[in-house]
Image (cartoon, rainbow, N blue to C red):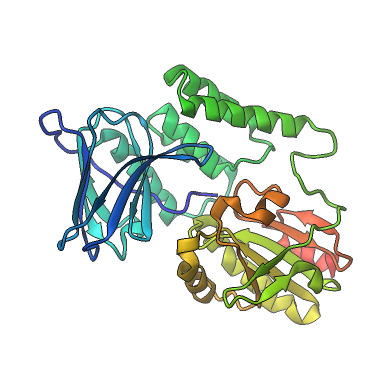
Length: 346
């Protein structure tokens, strides 16, 4: 799962020992703004709130310097994530509410963010085709925290062939930020991944080929309950995704292609969205924009607290499971070979 949205903030002069995140966002007049410190375990610490004035201007001050970390800025229903290096004074952002979640904004305040911005802008423009390409972007990161963050986003949080990469970033982060929650959380993540990888016959996955697919019963956008087990007799791609997930949206055209090609032969898709409660309309819009014409779209709108996500061990998205006509898992995370696996199951 690349996190839903990234921010771009560039360097500026600090102001007389002041510490603030401020900005002017057109279209955001009178909207509530909140700033949180975010962590790898998806917990957040509130740092302040403000209300945009009639011009969309806001300011959230801090009595102490900004610490090095990952931050989340929410403006109305929109939000952006960004990294600060711990040396910033005042960060000043300008942009438009309609496009701020697409990184179309300008800001002053941090050399760390200048580096981060370049990486994320390139990632949005480019579809990664191999783990080596992802690792090249990780190596471009300018701080150990940035490298660790990109590792979780680009290589995922499932056990597999990337344990050595996680361990390398863990050592660097522990040395650079000893005793911090970032270092502790990342170390715990690496320990969990190593444990998963060492479990016999598990392959690090909660759901294995040959297992009965756990049932899911959730509402669609119109409130109608749709149940996975009701599709027994078809070959079904169970697809965990979200409107905010860039890699998911890039993978959708191929899923649509395979669906249209084999829907009349017994293939169907059951899509579980990890969108947020305030992101229901984005979920609906993404279904339409990406041409996801199958009927089975469901969500609790609970983000990473998704019940079926936990049931299937989903820790990064996109995550897919191909289910055979008998209701058993026949493939885990088929992507490049999706059509091949569908044909075998049919």
